[in-house]
Image 1: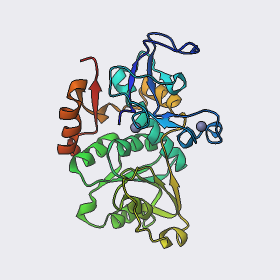
Image 2: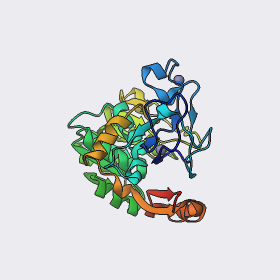
Image 3: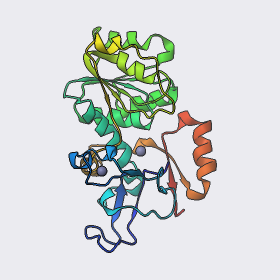
Image 4: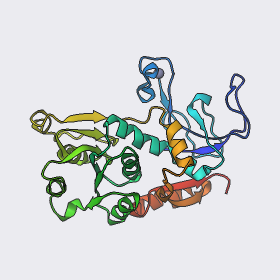
Length: 286
Ligand SMILES: [Zn+2]
Ligand SMILES: [Zn+2]
C-alpha cells in the first residue's frame, strides 16, 4: 500500500544531479539495486535485494516521501499530479502486455476489470490488439471496461464464460489472455481463455495458492503461461503517451480524499463499495 504517487521534489541528496528542487515527479515501487543479475537485464522487479515502497519501507500515503533518485521520473507540466499518480499501474499493464508479446491484430482476453484490468485494456489497445474481451463479475466494473474500450464484456455469472469466449473467437480462444484478479480460479480462467498455442499472462498477486491446475490444459494445448511482475522502465513511454493524450487513464480516478480521511473514505469505502471504485486518490495537502 502506498506505492503509486506523484509529487514535487523539495530536497535532494548530495550526489543527485539529474533532479532538482521543484521538479514534478512520479516513481516506481521497486527500489532495485541496479547492479544484480536481474537489474542489468532490465528486470528491476526481480532484483535480488530490491525493496518495495509501501512494503519494506514507508510508502507514499504521507505528505513527504524519501525515495532513491533513480526510481523517480520527471513529469512534464502538462501531466497533472493526479494522472502522474497513475503512471505506475499503467506501467504494470504495459509490462504485462510486453510479457504476453501482444501483436497487432491479436485477440486479447482479460480476466478482471479492476484498475489493472482496465489499464491492461488501454495497454492492449495501444499495442494494436484488434479484439479485447473482458470477463468481470461486477456490473459497475463491466461498465468501466466498456468505457475503456473493451470490444466485448462478459458476465461470467450469466453462463459459461469460456463458451462465450469461444463463440466470440470462432471456437479458438484468445491469442493472449491476462489474469488481472489474482484470487480463486482467476488464473485458470485466463488459461482457459487462451487459444491452443496462445499465452496466458498471470499479473494478479495472490494471497493464497491456487492448486487446481489441470496441467493437461497447458501440455496438451501447448499454451505458454507467463508471469508478470511490476514493471521494467515502461515509465518513459507511458509518461509520453499520457502527455500527448494517446493514453487517457483519468476515468480510473473515482474519488479524491484528504490524507486524514484515508481510512474512513479510502480503505473503508473501498471495502464497502469496491465496485463503485477504481483508484481513490489521497491528497496530503488538502
Ligand atoms: Zn538488483
Ligand atoms: Zn501499483
